[in-house]
Structures are given as structure tokens and as C-alpha cells.
Amino acid sequence: MSLTLTDEGLAKLITVSGEIDMSNAHLLTELVEFVCRQPAPVIALDLSRVRFFGAHAVSALLQAQDIATDARAAVLLRDPAPCVTYILATTGALRSFRFGRTCRTPESAARPMTVPPPIGGIRDV
Image (cartoon, rainbow, N blue to C red; front, side):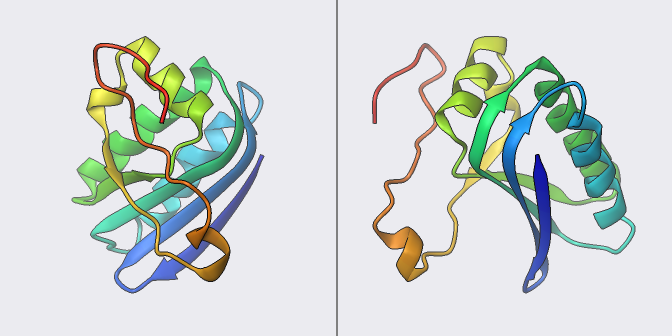
């Protein structure tokens, strides 16, 4: 897994790439904790490049959200990869998160957006 932290105005953007599993999920939580040391009203997590999303990743996202809430920040999930959406829906955690769109760049403009499935099940987009 790789994590990239950038500023988007008042918001902080964490871009996650690769696999989030039990060996590295804590790094995401620790980065959110670090970001919350400086006030940021929104922490966006770009999950479009995640290839594997395990149970520890769900736990890390929930912990990250709790940390941000305590710091009076909001967590937005941006463009979650299908594996992320599927696991969050399957575990019932999907409704715990807010979703946002990424800023469109020429590179991403042609890429279809991933839409979270309805709570009742998974659908193709």
C-alpha cells in the first residue's frame, strides 16, 4: 500500500493505492490521526486505486472516522474501488460513510465514476 497526502484548499486528500490488509491498515489510521493534529474540516480518502480491501481495512476506516469526528473533521470516501464498496456493503459499514467526488482532471475525466451500491445489495454501474 502507498499513501499520499496532499492539500485541497481547506481539505486534506489522502490517496490510497494497492492492498490494505492486516500488515498495513494501521498506517492509514495513523496518517488520519496525524492529519487531525492540524485542523482540517474535511479529510477525503481517494480509494480508487485500492486493489484489495480486507477486514482490517474496514476497521481502519471506522477508526479513522472516529479519530476525525473527535477532531471535528469529516471523512469523505472518494471513488471507492469496487472491492472497497463490496466489502463495506457486505459488512454493513457502507452506510457509516459519506461519499464525495474527486476533482476532474484530464486524466480522470474519461474514467467512469464508481457509485456505491444500494444498501440492499450490489449492482453494476
